[in-house]
Length: 144
Image (cartoon, rainbow, N blue to C red; front, side, top):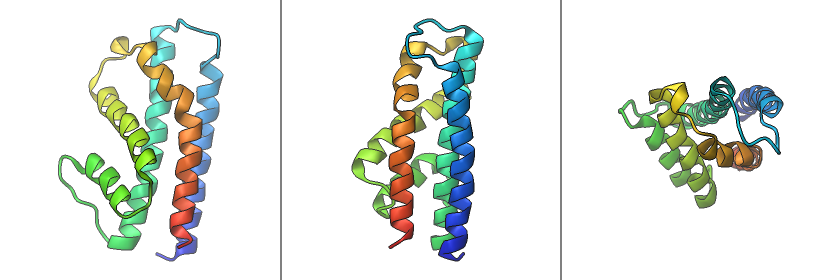
């Protein structure tokens, strides 16, 4: 895939992620400390959607550069680790995204009533900056 087409794909994916961030901001309020189960489920879904968008971008980069992605049960973790090894992301970003990956695993297997704001808050609070760092890393990698 041409780099320009890959950038266009990333642009579209980042637009979708930005739309999700906008929805997240409509639910999360800075002074609010108690959320209903439905609100927590929405917040968790938005965080999960953003991480899925990150994975979509990483998958597309790997497919264009390497032609394949491992299909092992651990492919989510393998993709993130490979992104570090291929220098798409930095060590710091890898550590941060690992937290979102762990949350993704929890979210997929949990019931909504088990979601706690104390666990979501750091992820929600840091998501916009994490995405900004990820976007910078992706475009720097594609411009090499």
